[in-house]
Image (cartoon, rainbow, N blue to C red; front, side):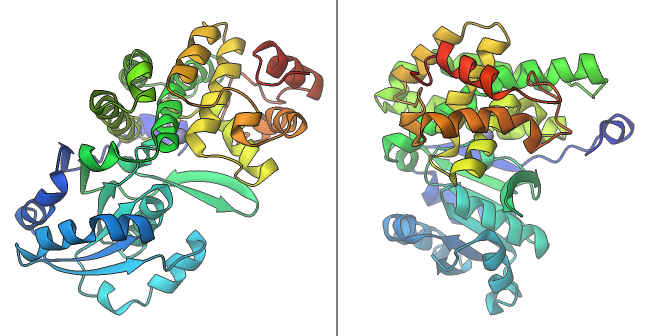
Length: 357
Ligand SMILES: [Zn+2]
């Protein structure tokens, strides 16, 4: 979306319902019925299906809502959307439900968008802020990008389910939220240097989420219920902030460009949030922020802080860092228009101890 468009016409679409807390999966049927949903197509993958299908099915059946599960029937996003386009049940489904992790949520969102259906988000891992945002992440033509798709009609964040997610996903969610610290700095910088639209309220909200979660790093590293609950609330808030801003700007800056570049260079070596966390350490150094505090909190949250921990060698890391600014040239950040030279990238990674030599 161009900055001019935002200033002239600013549209905000928000979820109608966000239900977060213990055992909210049991309320899905009741709430959907209240919203007039009568039949749903549930897209999921093997693990969430085996763990949560009974509870979800019984909640839907008890309210007379028709449903069909589609399990692990996709490989790539494109294939999935193409395969589902002609699915019989799509005709009668009022809504597409995504029950699972990032890919399931993204694919469900895309299908809902393309088929003009409502989208219902039931995340089973708190790994990134896509659980409540209108954005989808798509690998396209060898380059990763994200774009606006469909705002969820409802988000059901069951903290009992989410707190049982493997630690790596919880730590990833932490990394994705911490990334907002540098994202909002990049946004303001772009506003000052290029005149790009800047939403003070959205920026403050995104920063507030990151500041709040930074204090919970210990609890998140220990997977405590309180920590996971705070994380889930922060992830949902970030999704809402994206809707309010009408852009991913408050939640995605140079740290995200680095993560996307890394996925491009090393073919998705780690989870999105862990990569963003490492990017945030380096970008906060460039922004002259307290990068050590960010690094220490990532360590407490059991998130990655080094190249090794995100599954890349030092050369790949430096290459990604030097390529980051070119991933989305229209997104101005602290990396500037040309980006970092290989030497500058290597120095930055070294001084922040992301690489050793
Ligand atoms: Zn992210």
